[in-house]
Image (cartoon, rainbow, N blue to C red; front, side, top):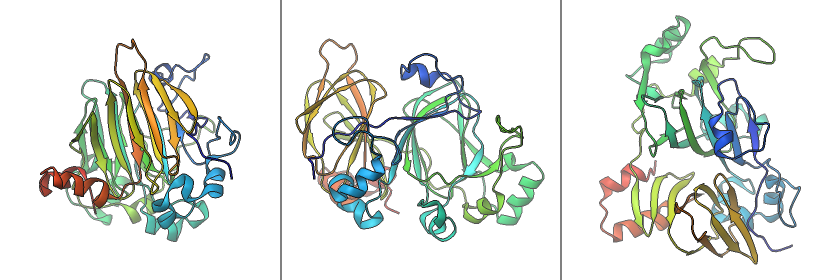
Length: 356
């Protein structure tokens, strides 16, 4: 078995009816660019690896071969040799459908044929038009019967909670939360790899290819949604020091923002892979005898067994190297214990580190 190394994957371009033009320009995609680019799936288990000895194989195939060496012992314990996360960028020129995702238990019981787990996600807002909002849960407690009647009457909007947002905000969307990204927003999303989405309302829009109304999934949506207002929405960041900020953490994933003015040495944890996604600046990643040039929009999968690596910002860049780091955390060991030792109180920890 060959030595693992930082993996680059071929991004998947998704062009829904609500997509825009900002993301293609931000990623510096080659011309001709899509007219409506809504999502780029930067790291996904079906993406094809495009560098090194594993080139042309899918991330899922490599994960099955290498197991814990690639995905980490924590992932194998909970999911087997399954690459469990999906990292994507989203450009919402128009509002997305009002939707909800199932949790693991429902997905395993009712969607086994899909092979997916449930879907909890978090959004890091990169840009937002003035007055931009997201839908996040209900504005007041409801019931299945009440909400079903409101949907049938075209009055679901009366029940929704809208949150104003701005660049830098973090929104946590656990499975079961009714939600929608609205117009004028570009964001990074980290989520369970599931693509199980149950649409509740879609503003009467029609599928561009068929001309038919886009499908709704009301029975399943009503099965899985939480009828109480969501207890958490915007997550306050927690400074970890040395240019690292914890944006959000839960048992399924953690997301940090790193700002590097100079070289940084780090190492992967055998318990988890990492995903590094560049937001600004340029530089070089060195690990396992390889060097990867970093530029805005690039995402790199760092196998759990990789070990030491260094990040070197490019000299002369006007902006520091900024990136996001996602992994599957041991919440107690990696975050709670070190932060308690620094004197962070339990109330503050619970705002950003979501243990339930």
